[in-house]
Amino acid sequence: MRIFIDKQSPKAFQALGQTSEAVRTVAAEAGLDRTVVELINLRVSQINGCAFCLDLHTRAAVRAGESAQRLGVLAAWRDTEVFSAPERAALELAEATTDPTDAGAQESAYDAARRVLTDDQISAAIWVAVTINAFNRVSIMSKHPVRANRGARGEESGLPVSGR
Image (tube, rainbow, N blue to C red; front, side):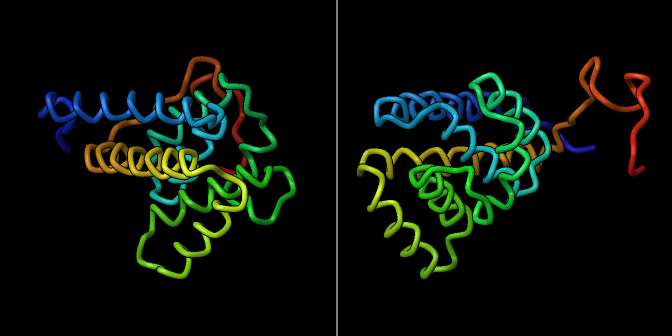
């Protein structure tokens, strides 16, 4: 069993939490809607395969008013027409931040962002991606569990589960 590094080193985790709060403030001041912030959190968590953060930020996105359709197609956002140009630019920046090895993708992301986002929004979107990447690593390396919610669809709720 792994240690929960957030519990083992609480001062470091608290500092990360303070960074996250500052980034939320920066995003709001830049005019990034809370749903855009949550879309970035979710897309980065999808790329990194962080189940804990996917669970947490799906619920946060729903609370912020995000639709089931958009959440369902987020992994294939480029193949849909449901995201606005600013949302698409923010998602592209998030992906380039999460996998910074492709210089061409970075340039493409910046070019797209410059057409529809302010400098403050570009900075905020990148900071959101940087922060969720850090939280993803904490949860992945700690193996934070995802448990069924009461009433969630699945064996725990007594409902049948297809595809198992």
